[in-house]
Length: 600
Ligand code: PRX
Image: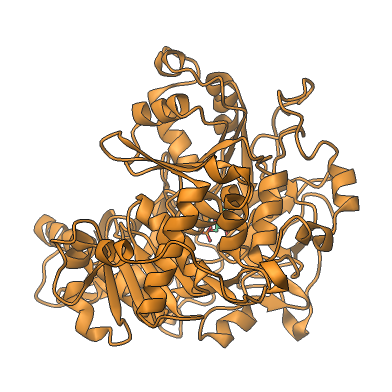
Protein backbone atom coordinates (compact mmCIF):
# COMPACT_ATOMS: atom_id res chain seq x y z
CA UNK A 1 0.00 0.00 0.00
CA UNK A 2 2.65 2.41 -1.05
CA UNK A 3 2.84 5.72 -2.69
CA UNK A 4 2.25 9.36 -2.60
CA UNK A 5 -1.11 10.69 -1.40
CA UNK A 6 -2.84 13.22 -3.62
CA UNK A 7 -3.89 15.94 -1.25
CA UNK A 8 -7.04 17.92 -1.80
CA UNK A 9 -5.72 21.04 -0.11
CA UNK A 10 -7.36 23.35 -2.61
CA UNK A 11 -11.10 22.74 -2.50
CA UNK A 12 -12.63 21.69 -5.83
CA UNK A 13 -14.25 24.42 -7.97
CA UNK A 14 -17.71 23.29 -6.93
CA UNK A 15 -17.97 22.51 -3.19
CA UNK A 16 -18.57 18.74 -3.07
CA UNK A 17 -21.66 17.17 -1.50
CA UNK A 18 -19.46 15.12 0.77
CA UNK A 19 -16.94 17.41 2.43
CA UNK A 20 -16.41 15.64 5.76
CA UNK A 21 -16.28 11.86 5.32
CA UNK A 22 -16.68 10.91 8.96
CA UNK A 23 -19.51 13.33 9.51
CA UNK A 24 -21.33 12.16 6.36
CA UNK A 25 -21.08 8.53 7.49
CA UNK A 26 -22.18 9.31 11.04
CA UNK A 27 -25.24 11.29 10.03
CA UNK A 28 -26.38 9.09 7.13
CA UNK A 29 -29.54 6.98 7.12
CA UNK A 30 -31.18 5.14 4.23
CA UNK A 31 -34.53 6.34 5.56
CA UNK A 32 -33.48 9.91 5.02
CA UNK A 33 -32.02 9.05 1.61
CA UNK A 34 -35.41 7.64 0.59
CA UNK A 35 -36.97 11.02 1.21
CA UNK A 36 -34.87 12.48 -1.64
CA UNK A 37 -37.14 10.63 -4.06
CA UNK A 38 -40.70 11.62 -4.76
CA UNK A 39 -42.68 8.40 -5.00
CA UNK A 40 -45.57 7.85 -7.40
CA UNK A 41 -48.41 10.35 -7.09
CA UNK A 42 -51.16 9.33 -4.68
CA UNK A 43 -48.82 7.12 -2.64
CA UNK A 44 -48.86 4.42 -5.32
CA UNK A 45 -45.31 3.32 -4.61
CA UNK A 46 -41.86 3.93 -6.06
CA UNK A 47 -41.02 3.55 -9.75
CA UNK A 48 -37.53 4.06 -11.15
CA UNK A 49 -38.75 5.62 -14.39
CA UNK A 50 -41.05 8.04 -12.60
CA UNK A 51 -38.12 9.22 -10.48
CA UNK A 52 -35.73 9.36 -13.43
CA UNK A 53 -38.01 10.98 -16.00
CA UNK A 54 -41.60 11.94 -15.26
CA UNK A 55 -40.79 13.66 -11.99
CA UNK A 56 -38.55 16.14 -13.83
CA UNK A 57 -40.83 16.38 -16.86
CA UNK A 58 -43.61 17.65 -14.60
CA UNK A 59 -41.49 20.65 -13.55
CA UNK A 60 -39.66 23.41 -15.38
CA UNK A 61 -36.92 20.87 -16.03
CA UNK A 62 -39.15 19.50 -18.79
CA UNK A 63 -37.15 21.61 -21.23
CA UNK A 64 -33.73 20.65 -19.79
CA UNK A 65 -31.70 18.20 -21.86
CA UNK A 66 -31.97 14.65 -20.52
CA UNK A 67 -30.05 12.81 -23.24
CA UNK A 68 -27.55 13.85 -25.85
CA UNK A 69 -26.77 10.91 -28.04
CA UNK A 70 -23.74 11.31 -30.30
CA UNK A 71 -24.38 9.10 -33.32
CA UNK A 72 -21.62 7.20 -35.09
CA UNK A 73 -21.55 9.85 -37.80
CA UNK A 74 -21.15 12.58 -35.16
CA UNK A 75 -24.67 13.96 -35.55
CA UNK A 76 -26.36 14.48 -32.21
CA UNK A 77 -29.87 13.49 -31.15
CA UNK A 78 -31.12 15.53 -28.20
CA UNK A 79 -34.05 14.67 -25.96
CA UNK A 80 -35.33 16.94 -23.22
CA UNK A 81 -36.90 15.48 -20.11
CA UNK A 82 -40.28 16.29 -21.70
CA UNK A 83 -39.33 14.43 -24.90
CA UNK A 84 -38.03 11.48 -22.90
CA UNK A 85 -41.20 11.33 -20.85
CA UNK A 86 -43.35 11.19 -23.99
CA UNK A 87 -41.12 8.69 -25.83
CA UNK A 88 -40.99 6.35 -22.84
CA UNK A 89 -44.76 6.59 -22.44
CA UNK A 90 -45.20 5.57 -26.06
CA UNK A 91 -42.96 2.55 -25.50
CA UNK A 92 -44.91 1.62 -22.36
CA UNK A 93 -48.14 1.77 -24.38
CA UNK A 94 -46.64 -0.47 -27.06
CA UNK A 95 -45.88 -3.10 -24.42
CA UNK A 96 -49.34 -2.81 -22.94
CA UNK A 97 -50.94 -3.14 -26.36
CA UNK A 98 -48.94 -6.31 -26.94
CA UNK A 99 -50.24 -7.70 -23.66
CA UNK A 100 -46.84 -7.53 -21.95
CA UNK A 101 -47.29 -6.69 -18.32
CA UNK A 102 -45.92 -6.49 -14.81
CA UNK A 103 -42.77 -8.43 -14.06
CA UNK A 104 -42.34 -9.66 -17.65
CA UNK A 105 -38.84 -9.46 -19.01
CA UNK A 106 -38.03 -7.13 -21.88
CA UNK A 107 -34.54 -7.71 -23.23
CA UNK A 108 -32.62 -5.08 -25.18
CA UNK A 109 -29.92 -5.89 -27.70
CA UNK A 110 -29.00 -2.48 -29.04
CA UNK A 111 -26.11 -0.10 -29.43
CA UNK A 112 -26.19 3.15 -27.51
CA UNK A 113 -28.96 4.69 -29.63
CA UNK A 114 -31.86 6.81 -28.27
CA UNK A 115 -34.27 3.88 -28.65
CA UNK A 116 -32.27 1.90 -26.10
CA UNK A 117 -32.87 4.58 -23.49
CA UNK A 118 -36.58 4.87 -24.26
CA UNK A 119 -37.03 1.08 -24.25
CA UNK A 120 -35.34 0.73 -20.86
CA UNK A 121 -37.31 3.52 -19.20
CA UNK A 122 -40.57 2.67 -21.00
CA UNK A 123 -40.32 -0.92 -19.76
CA UNK A 124 -39.86 0.34 -16.20
CA UNK A 125 -42.91 2.58 -16.60
CA UNK A 126 -44.93 -0.44 -17.63
CA UNK A 127 -43.63 -2.23 -14.48
CA UNK A 128 -41.80 -4.73 -16.67
CA UNK A 129 -38.25 -5.92 -16.06
CA UNK A 130 -35.36 -4.70 -18.20
CA UNK A 131 -32.78 -7.28 -19.17
CA UNK A 132 -30.00 -5.50 -21.09
CA UNK A 133 -27.80 -7.58 -23.37
CA UNK A 134 -24.45 -6.37 -24.65
CA UNK A 135 -24.65 -5.86 -28.41
CA UNK A 136 -21.14 -7.28 -28.87
CA UNK A 137 -22.24 -10.64 -27.48
CA UNK A 138 -22.38 -13.42 -30.05
CA UNK A 139 -25.43 -15.63 -30.70
CA UNK A 140 -24.62 -18.13 -27.90
CA UNK A 141 -24.49 -15.68 -24.96
CA UNK A 142 -27.52 -13.85 -26.35
CA UNK A 143 -29.66 -16.98 -26.72
CA UNK A 144 -28.63 -18.31 -23.34
CA UNK A 145 -29.52 -15.07 -21.56
CA UNK A 146 -32.83 -14.77 -23.41
CA UNK A 147 -33.68 -18.27 -22.27
CA UNK A 148 -32.50 -17.88 -18.68
CA UNK A 149 -34.36 -14.59 -18.27
CA UNK A 150 -37.64 -15.96 -19.71
CA UNK A 151 -37.62 -12.92 -21.99
CA UNK A 152 -41.05 -12.17 -23.48
CA UNK A 153 -39.88 -9.28 -25.64
CA UNK A 154 -36.64 -8.43 -27.39
CA UNK A 155 -35.90 -4.95 -28.68
CA UNK A 156 -33.15 -4.95 -31.29
CA UNK A 157 -32.24 -3.92 -34.83
CA UNK A 158 -32.90 -5.89 -38.00
CA UNK A 159 -29.19 -6.44 -38.45
CA UNK A 160 -28.50 -7.67 -34.91
CA UNK A 161 -31.60 -9.87 -35.09
CA UNK A 162 -30.49 -11.54 -38.31
CA UNK A 163 -26.93 -12.05 -37.09
CA UNK A 164 -27.55 -13.11 -33.52
CA UNK A 165 -31.10 -14.26 -32.88
CA UNK A 166 -32.97 -15.43 -36.00
CA UNK A 167 -31.07 -18.74 -36.25
CA UNK A 168 -32.00 -19.68 -32.68
CA UNK A 169 -35.52 -18.26 -32.53
CA UNK A 170 -37.26 -21.63 -32.67
CA UNK A 171 -35.37 -22.62 -29.52
CA UNK A 172 -36.78 -19.59 -27.70
CA UNK A 173 -40.50 -20.36 -27.48
CA UNK A 174 -40.99 -17.92 -24.59
CA UNK A 175 -39.87 -14.99 -26.72
CA UNK A 176 -43.22 -13.72 -27.96
CA UNK A 177 -42.34 -10.41 -29.57
CA UNK A 178 -39.28 -9.04 -31.30
CA UNK A 179 -39.48 -5.28 -31.81
CA UNK A 180 -37.24 -3.83 -34.49
CA UNK A 181 -35.76 -0.37 -34.16
CA UNK A 182 -35.21 1.57 -37.38
CA UNK A 183 -36.66 1.54 -40.87
CA UNK A 184 -40.16 -0.07 -40.78
CA UNK A 185 -39.50 -1.36 -44.31
CA UNK A 186 -36.77 -3.63 -42.93
CA UNK A 187 -38.64 -5.85 -40.51
CA UNK A 188 -37.46 -9.48 -40.67
CA UNK A 189 -40.01 -12.26 -40.68
CA UNK A 190 -41.39 -12.95 -37.21
CA UNK A 191 -40.68 -9.44 -35.91
CA UNK A 192 -42.60 -6.18 -35.55
CA UNK A 193 -41.57 -2.66 -36.42
CA UNK A 194 -41.15 -0.69 -33.20
CA UNK A 195 -41.19 2.51 -35.21
CA UNK A 196 -44.62 1.70 -36.66
CA UNK A 197 -45.99 0.71 -33.25
CA UNK A 198 -44.69 3.79 -31.42
CA UNK A 199 -45.95 6.12 -34.13
CA UNK A 200 -49.48 4.97 -33.27
CA UNK A 201 -49.04 5.06 -29.48
CA UNK A 202 -50.27 7.79 -27.13
CA UNK A 203 -47.61 9.81 -25.38
CA UNK A 204 -49.06 9.97 -21.91
CA UNK A 205 -49.02 6.92 -19.70
CA UNK A 206 -50.06 6.50 -16.10
CA UNK A 207 -47.52 4.35 -14.32
CA UNK A 208 -49.33 1.54 -12.47
CA UNK A 209 -48.73 1.14 -8.73
CA UNK A 210 -45.18 -0.10 -8.18
CA UNK A 211 -43.90 -1.56 -4.92
CA UNK A 212 -40.32 -0.60 -3.99
CA UNK A 213 -39.50 -4.31 -3.93
CA UNK A 214 -40.90 -5.03 -7.41
CA UNK A 215 -38.36 -6.47 -9.80
CA UNK A 216 -37.05 -3.85 -12.22
CA UNK A 217 -33.74 -5.00 -13.71
CA UNK A 218 -32.12 -8.30 -14.51
CA UNK A 219 -28.37 -8.16 -15.06
CA UNK A 220 -26.45 -11.23 -16.06
CA UNK A 221 -23.08 -11.79 -14.48
CA UNK A 222 -20.63 -14.66 -14.63
CA UNK A 223 -19.45 -17.06 -12.02
CA UNK A 224 -16.64 -19.57 -12.12
CA UNK A 225 -18.86 -22.35 -13.26
CA UNK A 226 -22.37 -23.01 -14.54
CA UNK A 227 -24.62 -20.74 -16.56
CA UNK A 228 -24.54 -16.95 -16.18
CA UNK A 229 -26.39 -15.70 -13.12
CA UNK A 230 -29.29 -13.26 -13.47
CA UNK A 231 -28.96 -10.75 -10.65
CA UNK A 232 -32.39 -9.39 -9.76
CA UNK A 233 -32.70 -5.69 -8.87
CA UNK A 234 -35.77 -3.82 -7.71
CA UNK A 235 -37.24 -0.32 -8.12
CA UNK A 236 -35.99 0.71 -4.70
CA UNK A 237 -32.44 0.52 -6.12
CA UNK A 238 -33.17 4.11 -7.20
CA UNK A 239 -32.38 5.21 -3.64
CA UNK A 240 -28.84 3.81 -3.87
CA UNK A 241 -28.34 5.04 -7.45
CA UNK A 242 -29.27 8.54 -6.35
CA UNK A 243 -27.23 8.46 -3.13
CA UNK A 244 -24.08 6.97 -4.64
CA UNK A 245 -24.12 9.44 -7.52
CA UNK A 246 -24.63 12.24 -4.98
CA UNK A 247 -21.64 11.25 -2.83
CA UNK A 248 -19.21 9.42 -5.11
CA UNK A 249 -19.84 11.26 -8.40
CA UNK A 250 -20.98 14.50 -6.78
CA UNK A 251 -23.76 14.76 -9.37
CA UNK A 252 -26.18 17.67 -9.54
CA UNK A 253 -28.87 18.76 -12.01
CA UNK A 254 -26.66 21.12 -14.00
CA UNK A 255 -24.05 18.43 -14.69
CA UNK A 256 -23.29 17.00 -18.09
CA UNK A 257 -22.42 13.43 -17.29
CA UNK A 258 -20.73 10.88 -19.52
CA UNK A 259 -20.45 7.27 -18.47
CA UNK A 260 -18.55 5.42 -21.18
CA UNK A 261 -19.81 1.96 -20.17
CA UNK A 262 -22.36 0.24 -22.40
CA UNK A 263 -25.82 -0.19 -20.81
CA UNK A 264 -25.51 -3.89 -21.65
CA UNK A 265 -23.46 -4.01 -18.44
CA UNK A 266 -24.42 -2.86 -14.98
CA UNK A 267 -22.28 0.30 -15.00
CA UNK A 268 -23.88 1.54 -18.19
CA UNK A 269 -27.34 0.92 -16.75
CA UNK A 270 -26.93 2.23 -13.19
CA UNK A 271 -24.75 5.22 -14.15
CA UNK A 272 -25.12 5.48 -17.93
CA UNK A 273 -28.91 5.85 -17.63
CA UNK A 274 -30.52 5.77 -14.20
CA UNK A 275 -28.41 7.70 -11.68
CA UNK A 276 -27.80 10.84 -13.77
CA UNK A 277 -31.46 11.02 -14.78
CA UNK A 278 -32.50 10.58 -11.15
CA UNK A 279 -30.50 13.75 -10.52
CA UNK A 280 -32.05 15.56 -13.46
CA UNK A 281 -28.65 15.90 -15.13
CA UNK A 282 -27.79 15.64 -18.84
CA UNK A 283 -26.63 12.21 -19.99
CA UNK A 284 -24.12 12.06 -22.83
CA UNK A 285 -24.16 8.80 -24.76
CA UNK A 286 -21.77 7.88 -27.54
CA UNK A 287 -22.93 5.38 -30.10
CA UNK A 288 -19.42 5.08 -31.49
CA UNK A 289 -16.57 2.91 -30.33
CA UNK A 290 -13.48 3.96 -28.45
CA UNK A 291 -11.22 6.32 -30.33
CA UNK A 292 -8.91 8.69 -28.47
CA UNK A 293 -9.59 11.75 -30.61
CA UNK A 294 -13.31 11.08 -30.62
CA UNK A 295 -13.37 10.80 -26.86
CA UNK A 296 -11.42 13.99 -26.25
CA UNK A 297 -13.68 15.71 -28.76
CA UNK A 298 -16.83 14.55 -26.96
CA UNK A 299 -15.47 15.66 -23.59
CA UNK A 300 -14.70 19.08 -25.03
CA UNK A 301 -17.63 19.69 -27.38
CA UNK A 302 -20.30 18.37 -25.06
CA UNK A 303 -18.78 20.30 -22.12
CA UNK A 304 -18.77 17.15 -19.99
CA UNK A 305 -18.47 18.05 -16.29
CA UNK A 306 -18.37 14.60 -14.67
CA UNK A 307 -16.81 11.65 -16.46
CA UNK A 308 -17.13 8.02 -15.36
CA UNK A 309 -14.99 5.58 -17.30
CA UNK A 310 -12.90 2.42 -17.01
CA UNK A 311 -9.22 1.76 -16.32
CA UNK A 312 -8.80 -0.04 -19.67
CA UNK A 313 -10.07 3.05 -21.48
CA UNK A 314 -7.76 5.26 -19.44
CA UNK A 315 -4.82 2.99 -20.23
CA UNK A 316 -5.66 3.27 -23.94
CA UNK A 317 -5.74 7.06 -23.64
CA UNK A 318 -2.47 6.97 -21.72
CA UNK A 319 -0.87 5.26 -24.70
CA UNK A 320 -1.89 7.99 -27.12
CA UNK A 321 -1.31 10.76 -24.62
CA UNK A 322 1.59 9.87 -22.35
CA UNK A 323 1.86 11.63 -19.02
CA UNK A 324 5.30 12.93 -19.74
CA UNK A 325 4.46 14.12 -23.26
CA UNK A 326 5.08 14.87 -26.01
CA UNK A 327 1.38 15.15 -26.66
CA UNK A 328 -0.97 17.71 -28.05
CA UNK A 329 -4.37 16.07 -27.92
CA UNK A 330 -5.82 17.42 -24.68
CA UNK A 331 -4.22 20.81 -25.28
CA UNK A 332 -6.10 21.08 -28.53
CA UNK A 333 -9.41 20.32 -26.81
CA UNK A 334 -10.93 22.51 -24.17
CA UNK A 335 -11.58 20.26 -21.18
CA UNK A 336 -12.21 23.17 -18.83
CA UNK A 337 -15.79 22.09 -18.07
CA UNK A 338 -14.55 18.82 -16.54
CA UNK A 339 -14.62 18.85 -12.73
CA UNK A 340 -14.58 15.18 -11.70
CA UNK A 341 -13.19 12.00 -13.28
CA UNK A 342 -13.92 8.57 -11.83
CA UNK A 343 -13.41 4.98 -12.91
CA UNK A 344 -14.69 1.51 -12.12
CA UNK A 345 -14.63 -2.12 -13.09
CA UNK A 346 -11.04 -3.25 -12.62
CA UNK A 347 -7.97 -2.16 -10.71
CA UNK A 348 -6.86 1.38 -11.45
CA UNK A 349 -3.11 1.48 -11.10
CA UNK A 350 -1.53 4.53 -9.42
CA UNK A 351 -0.15 5.59 -12.80
CA UNK A 352 -3.74 6.04 -14.06
CA UNK A 353 -4.63 8.32 -11.15
CA UNK A 354 -1.53 10.46 -11.72
CA UNK A 355 -2.02 10.50 -15.47
CA UNK A 356 -5.42 12.08 -14.90
CA UNK A 357 -3.91 14.69 -12.65
CA UNK A 358 -1.15 15.60 -15.09
CA UNK A 359 -2.92 15.28 -18.43
CA UNK A 360 -6.60 16.00 -17.73
CA UNK A 361 -5.83 18.30 -14.82
CA UNK A 362 -7.86 16.08 -12.47
CA UNK A 363 -6.81 12.91 -10.65
CA UNK A 364 -8.93 9.85 -11.39
CA UNK A 365 -11.17 8.75 -8.52
CA UNK A 366 -11.41 4.98 -8.38
CA UNK A 367 -14.71 3.43 -7.29
CA UNK A 368 -15.58 -0.17 -6.50
CA UNK A 369 -18.80 -2.11 -6.88
CA UNK A 370 -20.25 -5.05 -8.80
CA UNK A 371 -23.35 -6.28 -10.59
CA UNK A 372 -24.77 -7.65 -7.35
CA UNK A 373 -24.34 -4.40 -5.41
CA UNK A 374 -26.16 -2.40 -8.11
CA UNK A 375 -24.44 0.82 -7.08
CA UNK A 376 -21.06 2.17 -5.97
CA UNK A 377 -20.08 0.84 -2.54
CA UNK A 378 -16.48 2.06 -2.12
CA UNK A 379 -15.05 5.24 -3.58
CA UNK A 380 -12.50 8.00 -3.57
CA UNK A 381 -14.47 11.19 -2.95
CA UNK A 382 -14.05 14.56 -4.64
CA UNK A 383 -13.21 16.33 -1.39
CA UNK A 384 -10.96 13.66 0.11
CA UNK A 385 -7.30 12.88 -0.38
CA UNK A 386 -6.58 10.07 -2.83
CA UNK A 387 -4.21 7.22 -2.12
CA UNK A 388 -3.39 6.16 -5.68
CA UNK A 389 -3.97 2.43 -6.12
CA UNK A 390 -6.67 2.31 -3.45
CA UNK A 391 -10.38 1.85 -4.23
CA UNK A 392 -11.18 4.33 -1.47
CA UNK A 393 -13.55 4.05 1.47
CA UNK A 394 -17.11 2.74 1.88
CA UNK A 395 -19.92 5.15 1.05
CA UNK A 396 -22.10 6.49 3.84
CA UNK A 397 -24.65 3.76 4.57
CA UNK A 398 -22.31 0.96 3.46
CA UNK A 399 -20.68 -1.35 6.00
CA UNK A 400 -17.73 -3.33 4.64
CA UNK A 401 -15.44 -5.89 6.23
CA UNK A 402 -12.48 -8.13 5.42
CA UNK A 403 -13.16 -11.80 6.17
CA UNK A 404 -10.67 -14.57 6.90
CA UNK A 405 -10.36 -17.00 4.00
CA UNK A 406 -10.40 -20.77 3.98
CA UNK A 407 -8.48 -23.24 1.87
CA UNK A 408 -10.52 -22.66 -1.26
CA UNK A 409 -9.60 -18.97 -1.20
CA UNK A 410 -13.12 -17.84 -0.32
CA UNK A 411 -14.28 -16.59 3.09
CA UNK A 412 -14.11 -19.31 5.71
CA UNK A 413 -17.76 -20.00 6.53
CA UNK A 414 -17.28 -23.22 8.46
CA UNK A 415 -19.97 -23.74 11.07
CA UNK A 416 -21.98 -20.98 9.41
CA UNK A 417 -19.74 -18.32 10.97
CA UNK A 418 -17.22 -15.94 9.48
CA UNK A 419 -14.25 -14.16 11.06
CA UNK A 420 -13.86 -10.43 10.51
CA UNK A 421 -10.17 -9.48 10.23
CA UNK A 422 -9.56 -6.19 11.99
CA UNK A 423 -5.80 -5.84 11.91
CA UNK A 424 -4.66 -3.24 9.36
CA UNK A 425 -3.28 -4.75 6.19
CA UNK A 426 -4.84 -8.17 6.71
CA UNK A 427 -5.87 -9.77 3.44
CA UNK A 428 -9.26 -11.42 3.10
CA UNK A 429 -12.53 -11.56 1.21
CA UNK A 430 -14.43 -8.31 0.97
CA UNK A 431 -17.90 -8.57 2.51
CA UNK A 432 -20.78 -6.12 2.76
CA UNK A 433 -23.55 -5.93 5.33
CA UNK A 434 -26.87 -6.44 3.48
CA UNK A 435 -29.40 -3.63 3.69
CA UNK A 436 -28.48 -1.10 0.99
CA UNK A 437 -31.42 -0.60 -1.39
CA UNK A 438 -29.70 -1.67 -4.61
CA UNK A 439 -28.53 -5.01 -3.27
CA UNK A 440 -29.53 -7.78 -5.69
CA UNK A 441 -32.48 -9.76 -4.39
CA UNK A 442 -31.15 -13.07 -5.62
CA UNK A 443 -30.06 -14.83 -8.79
CA UNK A 444 -33.12 -15.62 -10.90
CA UNK A 445 -34.24 -19.26 -10.55
CA UNK A 446 -31.09 -20.07 -8.57
CA UNK A 447 -31.71 -20.23 -4.85
CA UNK A 448 -28.56 -22.33 -4.37
CA UNK A 449 -26.13 -19.80 -5.77
CA UNK A 450 -28.03 -16.97 -4.06
CA UNK A 451 -27.67 -18.66 -0.68
CA UNK A 452 -23.98 -19.31 -1.30
CA UNK A 453 -23.38 -15.56 -1.71
CA UNK A 454 -24.36 -14.85 1.90
CA UNK A 455 -22.98 -16.07 5.22
CA UNK A 456 -23.39 -15.07 8.84
CA UNK A 457 -25.13 -11.80 8.00
CA UNK A 458 -22.71 -10.74 5.23
CA UNK A 459 -22.80 -10.63 1.45
CA UNK A 460 -19.58 -12.19 0.12
CA UNK A 461 -18.18 -10.33 -2.88
CA UNK A 462 -15.64 -12.84 -4.22
CA UNK A 463 -12.93 -10.14 -4.17
CA UNK A 464 -9.79 -10.30 -2.06
CA UNK A 465 -8.80 -6.97 -0.49
CA UNK A 466 -6.79 -5.32 2.25
CA UNK A 467 -7.88 -2.42 4.43
CA UNK A 468 -5.20 -0.07 5.71
CA UNK A 469 -5.07 1.46 9.18
CA UNK A 470 -7.11 4.48 8.06
CA UNK A 471 -9.90 2.48 6.44
CA UNK A 472 -8.88 2.70 2.77
CA UNK A 473 -9.51 -0.51 0.78
CA UNK A 474 -6.94 -1.98 -1.62
CA UNK A 475 -7.86 -4.54 -4.26
CA UNK A 476 -5.73 -7.70 -4.28
CA UNK A 477 -7.52 -9.98 -6.76
CA UNK A 478 -10.47 -12.26 -7.32
CA UNK A 479 -11.02 -15.21 -5.03
CA UNK A 480 -12.39 -17.24 -7.95
CA UNK A 481 -11.58 -17.91 -11.61
CA UNK A 482 -13.69 -15.27 -13.36
CA UNK A 483 -11.77 -13.17 -15.87
CA UNK A 484 -11.88 -9.38 -16.07
CA UNK A 485 -11.01 -8.43 -19.63
CA UNK A 486 -11.28 -4.78 -20.69
CA UNK A 487 -13.54 -4.26 -17.69
CA UNK A 488 -15.97 -7.00 -18.76
CA UNK A 489 -16.53 -9.98 -16.53
CA UNK A 490 -16.11 -13.19 -18.52
CA UNK A 491 -17.12 -16.58 -17.15
CA UNK A 492 -14.49 -19.17 -18.07
CA UNK A 493 -17.13 -21.88 -18.13
CA UNK A 494 -19.10 -20.10 -20.86
CA UNK A 495 -15.98 -19.92 -23.05
CA UNK A 496 -14.97 -23.52 -22.33
CA UNK A 497 -18.48 -24.75 -23.17
CA UNK A 498 -18.47 -22.96 -26.52
CA UNK A 499 -15.04 -24.32 -27.44
CA UNK A 500 -16.08 -27.83 -26.55
CA UNK A 501 -18.83 -27.69 -29.14
CA UNK A 502 -16.15 -27.66 -31.80
CA UNK A 503 -15.60 -31.19 -33.14
CA UNK A 504 -11.82 -30.94 -32.67
CA UNK A 505 -11.98 -30.09 -28.96
CA UNK A 506 -11.90 -32.76 -26.28
CA UNK A 507 -11.49 -30.38 -23.36
CA UNK A 508 -10.73 -26.74 -22.60
CA UNK A 509 -9.54 -24.63 -19.68
CA UNK A 510 -9.85 -20.85 -19.75
CA UNK A 511 -7.92 -18.26 -17.76
CA UNK A 512 -7.15 -14.54 -17.84
CA UNK A 513 -3.63 -13.77 -18.99
CA UNK A 514 -2.48 -10.41 -17.62
CA UNK A 515 -2.28 -7.71 -20.25
CA UNK A 516 -0.92 -4.19 -19.82
CA UNK A 517 -3.94 -2.53 -21.45
CA UNK A 518 -6.96 -4.82 -21.10
CA UNK A 519 -6.07 -5.98 -17.57
CA UNK A 520 -6.45 -9.57 -18.79
CA UNK A 521 -7.05 -11.25 -22.09
CA UNK A 522 -9.08 -14.43 -22.31
CA UNK A 523 -6.78 -17.36 -23.01
CA UNK A 524 -7.83 -20.97 -23.61
CA UNK A 525 -5.87 -24.18 -23.24
CA UNK A 526 -7.29 -26.91 -25.43
CA UNK A 527 -6.87 -30.67 -25.62
CA UNK A 528 -7.64 -31.89 -29.13
CA UNK A 529 -9.54 -35.04 -29.97
CA UNK A 530 -7.60 -37.83 -31.66
CA UNK A 531 -7.21 -37.17 -35.36
CA UNK A 532 -6.85 -33.39 -34.96
CA UNK A 533 -3.47 -31.74 -35.19
CA UNK A 534 -2.27 -28.77 -33.14
CA UNK A 535 -1.50 -26.70 -36.21
CA UNK A 536 -1.77 -22.94 -36.79
CA UNK A 537 -4.81 -23.69 -39.00
CA UNK A 538 -6.57 -25.52 -36.17
CA UNK A 539 -5.83 -22.62 -33.86
CA UNK A 540 -7.19 -20.10 -36.37
CA UNK A 541 -10.26 -22.23 -36.93
CA UNK A 542 -10.95 -22.48 -33.18
CA UNK A 543 -10.43 -18.75 -32.62
CA UNK A 544 -12.83 -17.93 -35.44
CA UNK A 545 -15.37 -20.51 -34.25
CA UNK A 546 -15.36 -19.10 -30.71
CA UNK A 547 -15.61 -15.53 -31.96
CA UNK A 548 -18.58 -16.34 -34.18
CA UNK A 549 -20.47 -17.96 -31.33
CA UNK A 550 -19.42 -15.82 -28.38
CA UNK A 551 -18.71 -12.44 -29.94
CA UNK A 552 -15.59 -10.35 -29.50
CA UNK A 553 -16.27 -9.36 -25.87
CA UNK A 554 -16.16 -12.95 -24.63
CA UNK A 555 -14.19 -15.05 -27.15
CA UNK A 556 -10.62 -16.12 -26.33
CA UNK A 557 -7.88 -14.06 -27.90
CA UNK A 558 -5.29 -16.79 -27.50
CA UNK A 559 -5.37 -20.56 -27.68
CA UNK A 560 -2.63 -22.95 -26.64
CA UNK A 561 -2.77 -26.69 -27.20
CA UNK A 562 -2.13 -28.91 -24.21
CA UNK A 563 -2.60 -32.67 -24.44
CA UNK A 564 -2.59 -33.05 -20.63
CA UNK A 565 -4.68 -30.41 -18.91
CA UNK A 566 -4.30 -30.63 -15.12
CA UNK A 567 -7.36 -31.93 -13.27
CA UNK A 568 -8.61 -32.02 -9.71
CA UNK A 569 -9.47 -35.43 -8.34
CA UNK A 570 -13.09 -34.68 -9.07
CA UNK A 571 -12.15 -34.25 -12.73
CA UNK A 572 -12.36 -30.48 -13.12
CA UNK A 573 -9.74 -28.62 -15.12
CA UNK A 574 -7.51 -26.74 -12.67
CA UNK A 575 -7.56 -23.23 -14.05
CA UNK A 576 -5.57 -21.95 -11.09
CA UNK A 577 -2.67 -24.17 -12.06
CA UNK A 578 -2.93 -23.26 -15.74
CA UNK A 579 -2.68 -19.63 -14.71
CA UNK A 580 0.27 -20.25 -12.38
CA UNK A 581 2.11 -22.09 -15.14
CA UNK A 582 1.32 -19.39 -17.67
CA UNK A 583 2.69 -16.71 -15.36
CA UNK A 584 5.66 -18.74 -14.17
CA UNK A 585 4.35 -18.52 -10.59
CA UNK A 586 4.79 -21.11 -7.88
CA UNK A 587 2.17 -23.77 -8.43
CA UNK A 588 0.97 -23.44 -4.86
CA UNK A 589 -0.93 -26.04 -2.94
CA UNK A 590 -1.52 -28.86 -5.37
CA UNK A 591 -3.16 -31.24 -2.95
CA UNK A 592 -6.42 -31.05 -4.88
CA UNK A 593 -4.75 -32.23 -8.08
CA UNK A 594 -5.53 -35.63 -9.42
CA UNK A 595 -2.78 -38.05 -8.50
CA UNK A 596 -1.25 -38.58 -11.90
CA UNK A 597 -0.67 -34.85 -12.20
CA UNK A 598 0.85 -34.28 -8.77
CA UNK A 599 4.53 -33.57 -9.27
CA UNK A 600 6.89 -35.87 -7.43
O1 PRX B 1 -13.47 -7.90 -9.14
C1 PRX B 1 -14.10 -6.67 -8.96
C2 PRX B 1 -13.97 -5.83 -10.21
O2 PRX B 1 -15.13 -6.05 -10.97
C3 PRX B 1 -15.97 -7.00 -10.30
C4 PRX B 1 -17.40 -6.71 -10.58
O3 PRX B 1 -17.64 -6.84 -11.96
P1 PRX B 1 -19.07 -6.56 -12.53
O4 PRX B 1 -20.08 -7.29 -11.73
O5 PRX B 1 -19.00 -6.82 -13.98
O6 PRX B 1 -19.30 -5.02 -12.28
C5 PRX B 1 -18.43 -4.13 -12.89
C6 PRX B 1 -18.64 -2.70 -12.55
C7 PRX B 1 -19.45 -2.35 -11.42
C8 PRX B 1 -15.61 -6.84 -8.86
O7 PRX B 1 -16.00 -7.95 -8.11
N1 PRX B 1 -13.90 -4.40 -9.86
C9 PRX B 1 -14.87 -3.48 -9.88
N2 PRX B 1 -14.40 -2.28 -9.50
C10 PRX B 1 -13.10 -2.45 -9.22
C11 PRX B 1 -12.77 -3.81 -9.43
N3 PRX B 1 -11.55 -4.31 -9.21
C12 PRX B 1 -10.61 -3.46 -8.76
N4 PRX B 1 -10.84 -2.15 -8.54
C13 PRX B 1 -12.06 -1.60 -8.74
N5 PRX B 1 -12.27 -0.32 -8.53
